[in-house]
Image (cartoon, rainbow, N blue to C red; front, side, top):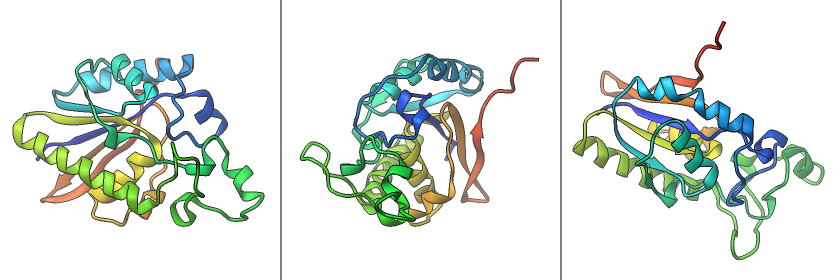
Length: 201
C-alpha cells in the first residue's frame, strides 16, 4: 500500500471567519487560491496514481490550482453536514450551549436539504472513501490524493488509524495544507501533518 495524501482546500471567507461550512458552496478567497498554488511543488514531487475531490467548488478549484486536473469527483468527500449550525461560528453556538464541541456534542437538525449528520455518519462516509482508496492502491502505482474539507479529513484520518470517528478532534487541520498518511511495519501512521512549503527568503 502506498501513501495517502490529504489536501484541505484553501481559505474561504467562511473558513476565515470560523463559520461552519458544510454544503454551502462558497468560493476560495484570493488568499485561498494562493495557498493552493503554493502546494504545487509538494504535489508535483510525487507520482499521483489516483486522485479524488469533493464536489464543492472550494475543493475542486484547489485541486485545479495544485495541478490535479483529472481528479474523480466523489460525494463521499463532502464536508460534514452541520444541519442547523450551517454558517454559524462556535462562539455563537456556545452562547446557548456552553462548552459545545462538534465532535462530542454534534449538531442540531437543519432544513430538509441539509438535515445534519452525526459523527458516526461522517465516519461511515470516511470508511467508504477509504475502501475506494484501497481499491485505487490495488490498481495503480503512486500516491492516492484526496482534496476535501477540514472536519471530514480529520474524521477520515481517525478511521485510517483505526480510531473512533470522534477522535478526529485530535487532528487540527489548517486550510491550504497537505497531510501524508502511510504505514510503518504494516501499521497505519501519520507521516506528515499540516505541511506547507517553506516561505521564500
